[in-house]
Amino acid sequence: MRLWSSGALVSVCFAAAIATGGRAASPPACDPGNGGLKLPDGFCALVAADNLGPARHLVAAPNGDVYVAIQQNRSDTSGVYALRDTDGDGKFDQKELLGNAGGTGIALRNGYLYFATPNSVIRWKLTAGQLKPSGQAETVVSALPERGQHEDKGIAFDGRGGMYVNVGAPSNACQNPDRRPKIPGQDPCPLLETYGGIWRFDENKTGQTFANGTRYATGLRQMIAIAWHDGALYLVMNNRDSLDQLWPDLFKPQDNQTRPAEPMYRVDRAGDNFGWPYCFYDYTQNTLLLNPEYGGDGKTVGRCSQFKPPIVAFPAHWAPVALMFYTGSQFPKKYQGGAFIAFHGSWNRAPAPQDGYNVTFQPFSGNKPSGKFEVFADGFAGRTPLMQPNLAAARADGVAQGPDGSLYIGDSEKGKIWRVLYTGK
Image 1 (spheres, rainbow, N blue to C red):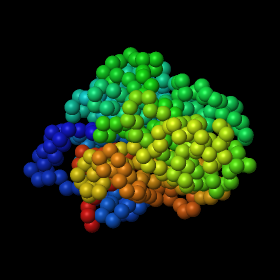
Image 2: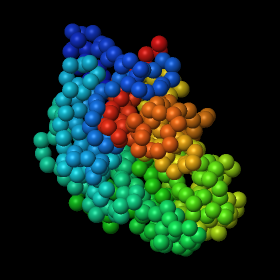
Image 3: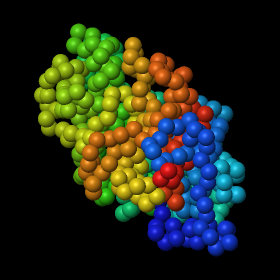
Image 4: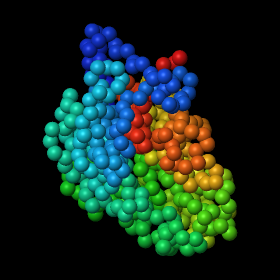
């Protein structure tokens, strides 16, 4: 989703030039060691904010302000932090808190700041030049389903009045009881009536409820990493867990370390079905396979041939949490039009080390992936090997593009916000 027009970007650059006596503003200085991040040659980073709490998605305004969603129930603070750099050093020195409920999805759209909590989407009207909205939030959608597991919501806009919200499934593979060894999956899975998909709402109407939405895509477990790009909705899904623990006769620990993949999907039309909970995409065989809860043995395709496959796949249990397509020009051409994905990192690869604490780049050509993904930003875990997720120094949980084309990355452990710049040096 493009967050500013070319005219807005020109206005920002013009304002910066005025602030520096008619000269273009110099980029801020990066931190020694890039604030702990490992980046490709030619890139550097600075810590623009710290200790915000469990930061989730973030978005940058045309004037350089940044808005950060703070998760609820993990700290004394929740809501949205509005951040501003008043002296041009790259560090946010002004901070305002909006709202009193935590959430994940956040976006700027047509003069409004949108924020997705586990059970609603609200918005504030923003006045140009103001950091904090002066009015009260209004509710766009209420009564979104939440049942504890996979309740976080992401949001995306199609530019034609459509607002898309994920509704994650409160389950691993639709067992009842859930996550128990050798329990078959419910068939058909009743959760798919209300969960496990993307719903579309009207961005211009307030007072909607979940019942007013239209199910746009189904067969998805949890997919807060969503974005609209080049005429279609893209998402990266958190796949199922515990193949070896739930089905030890069929799968070994090494299978759980490599299977299943975290898939990226393109929703081409309303009604697309991607196969959860009946199938999982196998990272080792590059195909959709039948889940053991539905008679699969790690080799059988069965009914999975009827569902849409991913357009690209990432390693098992990396836990995708945010997706952004790069529309700027500061980064080299190879990054332009490609996707940045924030991966939160695994929790269930034992006895192997945990993995996937990074921001990954997937090149695109038009609306299709073009080439293999690469880890763009690493070093979040802070220690190698990492055996327990709670020992990670940081976990990437948001990506956003600044008006100058720099990349902001958020962290859900301590609430750091990095700003990544390309210097070419």
